[in-house]
Image (cartoon, rainbow, N blue to C red):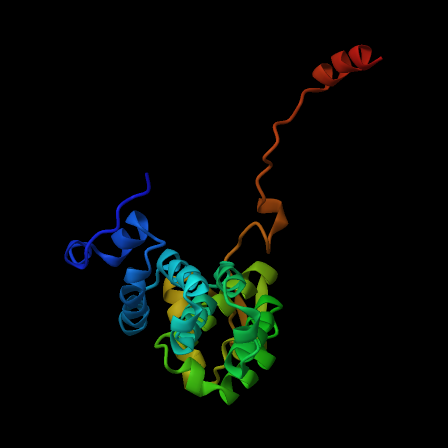
Length: 229
């Protein structure tokens, strides 16, 4: 027997996350999930599971789809990069909806971020502020992602490259760098301050990569050959 559908009174005693866990295919929770998306925006929190649940319900109730809410979900998913949340969400959105201009724009922005084409990203974002500025914290989240991507690619990064990646210059860039020096382990080289040394990791310093395989002693290998023969 399937799980009985809770009454509205019973549902009101659950949090949204509990509603998703208890009965994710109940269309009655759709308004709660939509409100929860708006709550995530205003409180600058994020729940991929709840948002995916809403997009799945829209698949079963296409006439109830709110494209304004869907756009907010995708913007929040972009802010979660380098996680693959955007692709997971986009997969649940009908192709006819994806063809709407705002969703084509968000898909292009996702592609620019995935490929590290930050100048193109910021140029495109500037043309579509009406979509992005509705979600507080968007710019800061992308700047954090850009910094993360640079740290995987560079041991040292020129200030000009950093400026392009995070879309900052002048005093605002100085403040950003100062924050990273204080909290992220960045170092500004002495001199004119045009070079920033990024923290070492296994990607920008391959010699730090851990060897996941155990070293096999030579004598053990020698014993294998007779068996193979």
